[in-house]
Image (cartoon, rainbow over all chains, first blue to last red; front, side, top):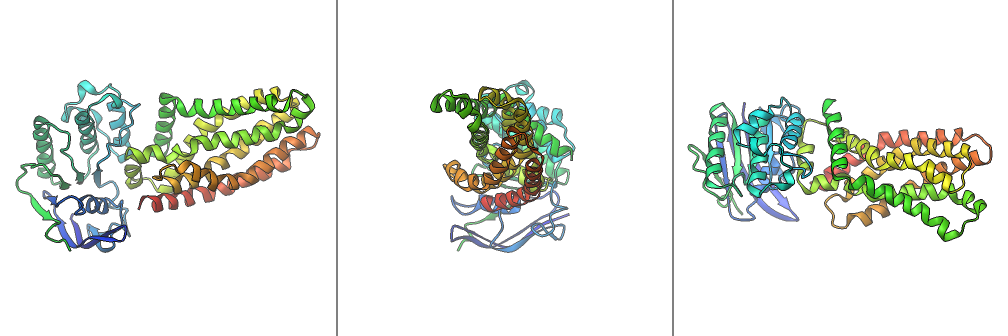
Length: 203
Length: 221
């Protein structure tokens, strides 16, 4: 069980953002993607989530290219991007419920409890604050199990208490043999963590 | 397969909660049709002559009105990313979206169309033909519209471009749809026209999801 990225290069609007980015993840490992604004952190994560094709290089999950043979990769990862993917007309529970059952083997109550959302469960997502929306979105991660978490700025809008709570959830995920690939500007205080600095691999 | 129905159910529930999609296209349809007697005068013979065309054109435009939201709403809040990388093939995803669009934005038009037909002095038989033609023909509108919606997703003011792309493709549906109603007004069989409409719909059912899925991948990459 491994995730390997080799010699990735990414181009956006005729501009080469990064090249020769390689890393690998084994169960229990986490990679913290760092870099200045515009270094390509989000693009790298979108490539790993199959949302963007790399200019060159390849990404393998258990030895299979995720862009050619994606059958075994689909459903094995969660992607959490900048946007919250919440429907404002639905309640917190309905939002989590939909994504969890769309992803497979849902456990909504567990997720609500893990991110302390029980009190908000029946509130429309449109009424939530930014931090509450983020927590609802993070709850997707545990509402249906997946080996790999790809997280783009998972801590933004969270207060100290919930950053600590999220760190605990992430630690448990890693302890249970999960993997994580995340980009954040805040210090997550996670140990051990491998750091991938896109500034060093920059052009 | 359960995911397919889940997605349809989600879109229908959203449409009912927000209410805008259903009431928007429905009230647009009613107002456009009602404007025509005011514009051309109350002569019953004239109204019966232009009635089928008016109803069909109004249905095309009303359908177009909600098309740009088919993928746009999910694109804007990031849901589309998650749907695309999910376990459902993109073609099935498009088909689920199309079915939800048809049920929430087009089916209400078909329900109200007989009443509007009466107000345009269409004879009873031709109202049956009209309803039949709408039922058989309008799935094409959602299916072809999905291709345009997929190509313009993420574009600012994509709705105008969408209309220009899609309206010309609606011409066959318009021609056969109006012909079916005209035939029944002339006491002829509407069946050949309905069969042609059905053929067009089946063709669109095959091509639409494939083309729209390709369009979505293109727009998102």
